Length: 222
Image (cartoon, rainbow, N blue to C red; front, side, top):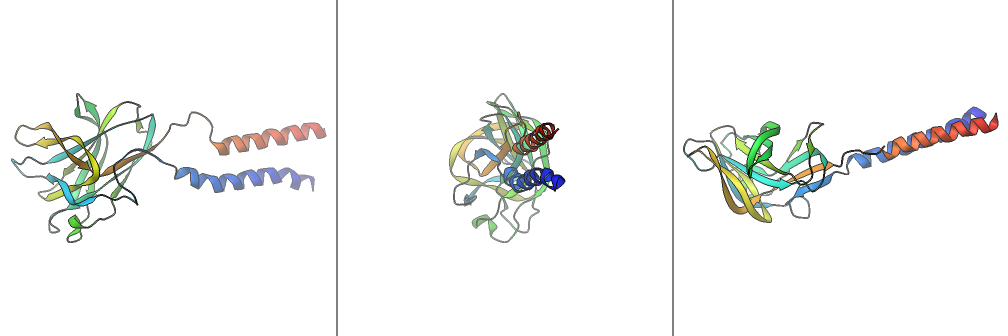
């Protein structure tokens, strides 16, 4: 009976951690989000073009955001669509550092992201593409970053825009191979992350406290 009573606190602590951990894993913070509620709503009738053809004005589109705090990046959701469903649907998406107000070095990349391809999807809302980040990508408070989308094939594609978020962004031009500022409704996307863990997680503290309490109880019995 003594052994059974000693193990009960541990069983309780582990059970609590198993119930709490899945909830904690879903608690991503919206570092930037220009979708509208309910859900991830955006303007499916308008988009910034993603074209990969010689001598066009629209090849890549870059949307900026500034980190409100220090975060470990977890996910980027982005609304990409194919205007002509017969075109290829692959898009390269990158997270870039800032370089004098334009996209700079690539921090992380997602290659050959498949945009929505169903016929007429450019005019109907669809689930945005969810791009999961690799562990170790840290965003610094007050720093500006860029989410960049580029078509990978000769295609006519679009980054559907936000319903309300208008402001400056950047467009890459084939004319001079440089980034140029534009001002219109930005492409719809969000950036999610978690604050870096500076203190032990609740489950760690619970298990540690249970161990200390059990140790003190044994000493008192002796």
